[in-house]
Image (tube, rainbow, N blue to C red; front, side):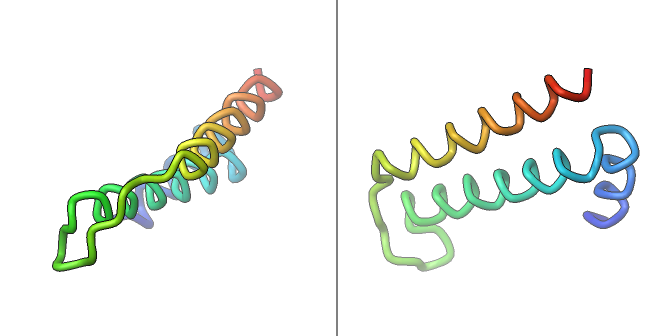
Length: 69
């Protein structure tokens, strides 16, 4: 299912933006799993540097999207 969605997104957004958004979703998901101890994982608080990393990735996605317009 995910592969089908990625194939559609590559045609709509481009390869670079699709990869960045997929990675961003995985990173945000893993932060939620760690923050709340889901799936019996050890609870770890989200560190400010992790938020900065997410913001940098979002800024990169915005810059890439700006170049495509």
